[in-house]
Amino acid sequence: MLESVDPLLVAYLPKDIRSTFFPYASVGLAALILNLMIGYVLSSLIGIHFRKYSTAFGNRKDFSRLFPLLMLSVVLIITVVKSSLALALGLVGALSIVRFRTPIKEPEELMYLFLNIGIAIALGAGQTFAAMIACAVILILIAISKKRMARSFQEHGLFLSISYTVEENTSRESILTDLKSILTDHVLRMDLSRLDFSNSKVDALFFINIHTAEELDSIIFEVNNKFHQAQISILEQNDISGL
Image 1 (tube, one colour):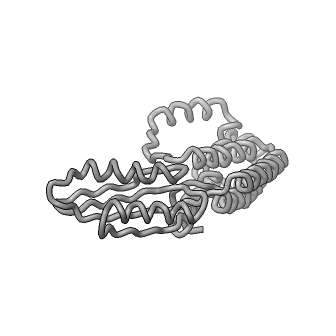
Image 2 (cartoon, rainbow, N blue to C red):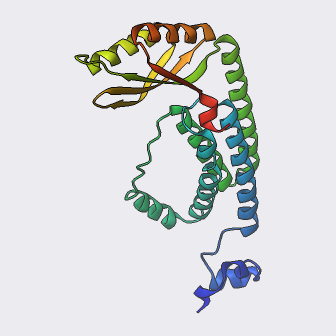
Image 3 (cartoon, one colour):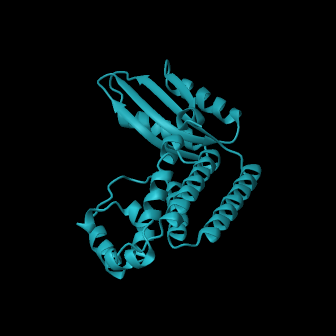
């Protein structure tokens, strides 16, 4: 019967009664609530830092919204597990059957996830002050490093869409090869994001990194010379990432 009592009420019972009737209620609710609130604030700061300084290709705004949920979940798990060896062993068994199938395409996204998990583990273990200091120092160091890289190596990420009507007796594979050859001569980095073949048309979407606008002008000029009446669309990365 006592097992069905609300755990919030248990915290207000005298210590001798809690130890007698609720031997497993060893988690300090006040400390847990405090760490959850601090974790939410820190994860929000990490999200802001990620949206401002990350160079990931995907939608950084949507991805950073997951940080508070990840942070709070890990804080709760570590807080509960640290008080019981049996729970710790049970957690190992439970995680062995969990399969995370969501792909993490960018290493930088993975690093920010590890940062959230590391701060959450520190909060759950009761190292609140250390977690706050570590989070602040890490974010400041990353920001300084990013700014130094931006000053020494300025680049712009763009989505380049090329649509071309295929002439008769023209190999579509050769068109793609020619496009890659043109881009390779002018870009720092090139990724083929999408390629569509049809009976009379080729649509290709590239993500490219360039230094200056002159390089983009050269790409457009060479593509127009090689492929007459090709349709070219350019979209800046920041419009996609939702900064």
